[in-house]
Image (cartoon, rainbow, N blue to C red; front, side, top):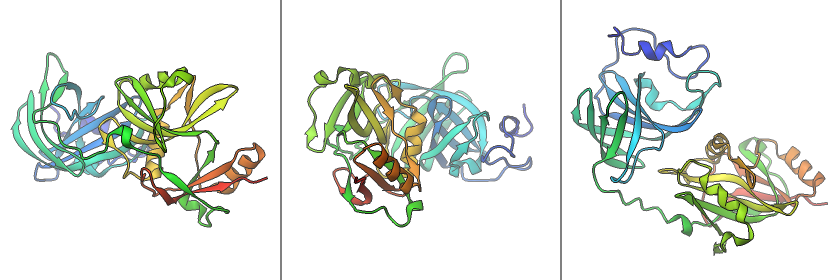
Length: 332
């Protein structure tokens, strides 16, 4: 047995190359064994990490499909190395090529109560800012673990995906003065549409509600299978390119169990970029932090209708025309 619970953690990381906390060997801190964190980890494959404070470290599990909100399914939970307590507040970009390389964002954190803790079974009640629930983690044959929700599914209070409407920009004649506070995109002049993805199916809705079936755009139906079964709500524009409909994706409103409306635009865009959504009839649009003049210039040169300016700290406000977002016509 390792003399230090963090030996394995340290052996996988170079403190000079990762922004992650890498504490020096020594006595472990004493806590209350009641902190949990769920982190959205855009590593080689998107997954969620559940960490529970226990005996001076964070016991950790990687959960590919996220924390189940429904008691019907059991989700795989891969038991990983213990992490330092400082990891409970960590967000950042782990460099490519390093262990766990990719974007790490906190999805939720809070406190928990222990009902049972053995080498093969952990029962806890978690209470966070975004969700709460009673869960059991249990070891199956071999090294695999599973996670199961033990209480009824919560009332999320979230509107159904089909009821969401796109957030809209205000019309402006000029770019904002403080361009460093904005991310800039191209207005491609297509049909604004939200894509609700669930169970491999995709349904589009626009500013006026649900859009017609995909009979006119059959290729867009394949978008429903791009996230490996994870539900999501995306925002974008359907544009015609050489007579072919392409869904140009510019935002993500929900992902798996996570509602992202209150996450700032900059972090939503980073999450969207890491999803790497590219296909024959869809792709992620580029965005350019702080570079509005260049975006507007290119929009004029390419005959695009406008540039969009979106504050980096902007939440997503469905169905609202907000000054957080601006549309600046490209002109002649």
